[in-house]
Length: 295
Image (cartoon, rainbow, N blue to C red; front, side, top):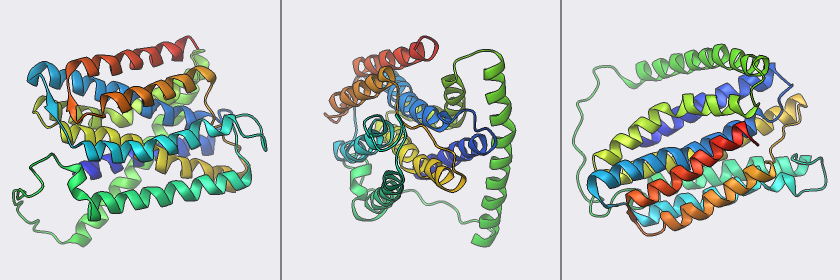
């Protein structure tokens, strides 16, 4: 269920980003801004609130350290290659990648995420459940009266509706931000808040119920899925439509990403969570919001 929730939110994000990029070539950094906003909101906002709420109610909570390390070990290099690497390459313009670099990043993102999915769902599932729960039997659910073809068709219909809603929402948002003279990054931030609302609620609710492992799976899984799946979508549009996407972050946002990664390694490196850790992540989230309006 956690995995399906994550992939559903990322599908909505990708649909929105692709829609804006296909219909508006004036903002080549929209995909980057949305990805960065998701990472900041998840790692600092959602996880920060979850740690704070859970810590205030339960004082100290535990989660599987091996799972957190697995998420971060893949999230850190992919985020660095996607959002920082383009600022240091010299083959193309600042913040962009050459053809070879685009193909490399596209293939590696999909390949590494596929490998991670195998680890999460097949070979190392014990990493992503709380200690002592691996051998517990999950409660049985009543079988549906309809077969899988019905649910497959229903899923396809929902996906079409999601894409249509993304198109109706994304274009007025982009136009409205420009007409009001607001920062361009605000559009990406708004899209990220919209798609992350269900996951944020689920993660915070799980932390209040002393299910910190589920909160971690939702938060870290969303951040990883965003980088690993949105980057290929952006690069495919770049390659086939010739719309050069800007991926590299500004110096201030690059500093925020590096600081977030460092703090996450420290706060999520013990297997125990408390309210003070949540306050640290919320501090970084507020700093990110300040940078949107005062870069």
